[in-house]
Image 1 (cartoon, rainbow, N blue to C red):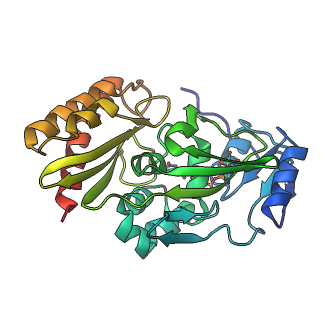
Image 2: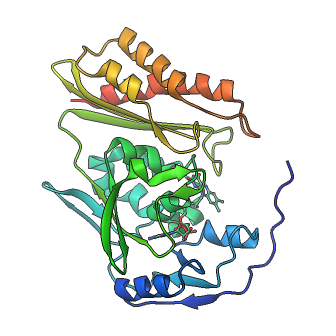
Length: 295
Ligand SMILES: Cc1cc2nc3c(=O)[nH]c(=O)nc-3n(C[C@H](O)[C@H](O)[C@H](O)COP(=O)(O)OP(=O)(O)OC[C@H]3O[C@@H](n4cnc5c(N)ncnc54)[C@H](O)[C@@H]3O)c2cc1C
């Protein structure tokens, strides 16, 4: 495989709106020619590789309040489009109530990239291996999306439409991530499999959330990364678990079903067969780990 050559940044004009309304007007005015920039860790690389050549970059940093993390018992967790990977990794609230998110954030990139890069930028880049996607999917998170004509909400699960493709139009802005509180008696785990310990994209990512009532699995969700054109739910595996006593045999059955559901390709990082086998192993490990957390 020929690695794409990296050049200097192409010329662009940087626009710095002070309100969301202003940002939306600029995106509509320059529809298709403008891109939103958050941390820039992904977009600037794409521009240097000439995969994207926007004439305008709409920066969000002058808009107050976009790095807020809020939580309440009724509505759960809400965070803005400038919340960084580092913030989610380190937030005591996220660590305690939504540990799968801080766990996923901690597996990403380097400290420098985590300081700049945002959770929303990770989703909007829409890589099948995006580390924040599987955890947000099993938590049932939604994205609030705005354009100058109004707002809509979409489940993170439905946001991805293909490799590097999402349901977002060029004149739209993700303005909030909404994460409902997990059910009581739940445990959750994200496992990322890479060859190197750091600075590597996932070969396979597995997120699970399990809820138990008196030893019976009342709910289970499994999401997989890097094994299909988009992050995906393993719904057959989930349905095997629901309503049944949580046993080692059941867990093995569900892990095998998840592996069957995965649709990986072979590429420079791993073969499809290897990825399928790793889905089986890591799903079993993640389910077991999630169960162990339940008090
Ligand atoms: C060295 C290195 C290592 C990396 N390692 C990992 C890794 O381990 N795992 C992983 O998943 N990723 C990794 N990445 C990819 C990248 O860093 C992350 O995806 C990061 O979260 C992107 O966030 P950002 O804020 O920098 O996005 P940006 O580069 O600013 O934007 C990315 C895309 O999202 C769009 N966008 C951003 N915010 C919004 C918004 N609010 N509304 C609409 N569109 C928006 C932009 O227009 C652009 O298309 C790595 C990148 C580098 C350079």
